[in-house]
Length: 247
Length: 323
Ligand SMILES: Nc1ncnc2c1ncn2[C@@H]1O[C@H](COP(=O)(O)OP(=O)(O)OP(=O)(O)O)[C@@H](O)[C@H]1O
Ligand SMILES: [Mg+2]
Image: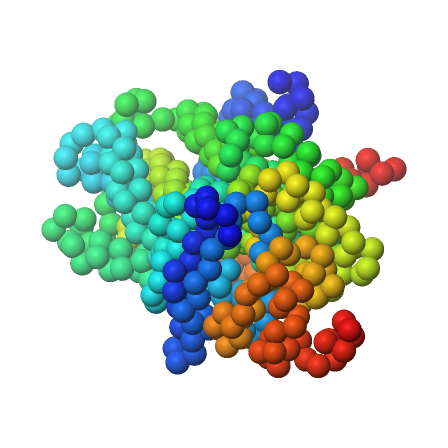
């Protein structure tokens, strides 16, 4: 890690659902300009961690600092206005609105007028490869494009830190390459990202650092190459086949 | 401007015809129907602000109607002041009540919210019925007719233009919600609250604001209605029937469309008035016939045009554009 202050700083964050501890004492720091990957088996608490960071759940204990400000327990809209937003694993398009209106509603958060937000939305829609579908209802989009719409809408709010929750799941190889390319471009433009993904090949190409969650705990952290060699990670998540395939 | 008029052709026709009618028609019965069409349309448009645009479907909007009606009536009969002051007091009280309902909407979703709004109107019904010393209880209050604008004692023609004005105000609010920044954000809230929050939208504040605005407009219509009809009683003004009427006109006409509530009102109010006149010579057994019409119209709309009458117009336009 560099000596500059991290853009996101989680200190021992815990979130419980009744008797189940979905996120257990997780501490992590994200440097500005970084792409952090989060992996872990189903039910490990990855999405819950995003929900806590972005303000949907209040953690039972722990503290979350974003760009130096304590955002623990703040509502999502306030956190978004500070420059941190997320996409949803189960996509949540505004189904009865057009694609361009979906994105424009995101842009309105930074822009005072409908006309300026529409211009911004056109730019973002173009950048995300949705221009051909801009006028269509969001509910008519196939799943691959709905995931893109999640990203486009979030980008329109001009975040400094963007949390992507499995935006690659269910995509075909062409779509996958497209979204990896998009994320790289955003990163090159200075965006900081945390990416949850099961597709290891894509994760290896994108992330500079990976955190592994298991039963709500961060059990390992390190560079992608090192993580795939970690015994606990192989046992908990990757499995022997992965290691053999890599070799 | 001409572009706006062309885009709002339907509204120009509807409101234009309403404005011209008193110039050529003198028949009191006909003008009375027109006033009711406009008032019920305005009330459904007011309901639409919460139910259609913000997605907060209330079946308790009679609460605000009743508050407006009683504020105006009591201001005249108990305090000897003008109904306009009563209208203003009604708006303030209704915004207060709207804030309560709006906060409920943040706690309760869908059917639970709708049920709580019914409960709210029932509480008002019971309260006003019991408080005999002040409200005259279940007997109701006759509102005296005093000719003049300040006392809202108008002739039929005057009432048409009064109802048309309030209809235009409600319609303008709807149009604003379709084109403005806050209107788009409200559409996001209606479609998906979680997603709207992630985009920086203060969903709770917007919902409460929409319900309060809707309440204020409903209250204004209620005050005018009390002066027009000249009588208020709690069982009618706080009735679930009335709340359902506001919602149904909007649903039949097209929820979340600006002209829809007025189209719904034209269909339902004129059918009702016509049938009431026709069946009044018949048996008392047919007194509730308009409920059957509501039911039938609703079933037909839901089955064939789920987006409402305004949806038919949009479909025709689409077909023409493709042809
Ligand atoms: N709202 C909730 N109420 C109760 N339990 C929940 C809730 N949300 C998540 N959980 C539980 O918390 C645990 C972590 O869930 P989470 O969705 O965070 O996992 P995940 O790592 O994102 O899994 P996946 O890879 O399948 O998306 C699971 O056991 C889940 O059942
Ligand atoms: Mg998940």
